[in-house]
Image (cartoon, rainbow over all chains, first blue to last red; front, top):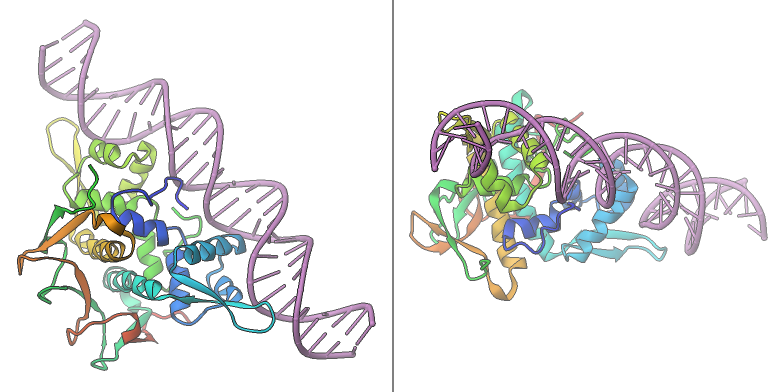
Length: 150
Length: 150
DNA sequence: CGTTGGGGTTCCTTCAGGGAACCCCAATTG
DNA sequence: CAATTGGGGTTCCCTGAAGGAACCCCAACG
């Protein structure tokens, strides 16, 4: 957790960071998304400290993006994305698109996405939920909303 | 900076986190995007420690997402987004969409986006760069890419 | 020529991350 | 039926990053 609490800020970026902005959290979500749902798997894959992994998983469960679910008669658990958590993967997909473009270098992107709808390997693009046209930073005006701070 | 270095991982999420994953960095980028380009402004707006703000700004400049530019004959500087940095705002826009949906509560979203192309207040949606149809976590297969680790 | 204001730097304290060791419990093994 | 194994943590210590306040430099300005 950041030392400063972002959750009370009147900003959806800050609030989202409160959920998944701590170090490792996005990578934990990535691992779970690609099917590594168990503590030992994630710990081994990331090389994260067990202590921190425990904290992050609990935090993500608390925030409702993961569900802790027993998978055996023995006390064994796996972590699965909730609906809320699955939608959070959108953020990771955009990070992948940016990282692929700007940081992958000669070797090319480490992973590719194949889109079920068209069968092609492609990447994610931002569009307007209203008109469907591209929608990036320079295509918008930012206005105060109903939940703006006084 | 996270204690563990993410920049060498064969993962575009980890690499992107190396650029903007430290605490405060996304909020600094947000402030600069909405026009608060000077040290004192950002520091006052966020309530961030001056030391940390200095570190973050230098890091973002080093990574090529910000440019430090004099704006006066006096030694005064402002920070502006590069092209690379503007594209990184995509990540924030998706975080806003998620935070607005899942965390805004009764009060509603703190800010609204008006899309220039259609003039409507809306939010960002993920689509496939190839076919244009929606593209979310469940709509893709993840495949190893050319830059995958051995 | 003292003050102000932007843009930092220094210093100290506290707390989070890294890493290793340890623990509990259910099932399997000899 | 004791001993072992393995999943899923918890505890401990050490280091380093975040918070916060004080300080600094320099160019105008009054």
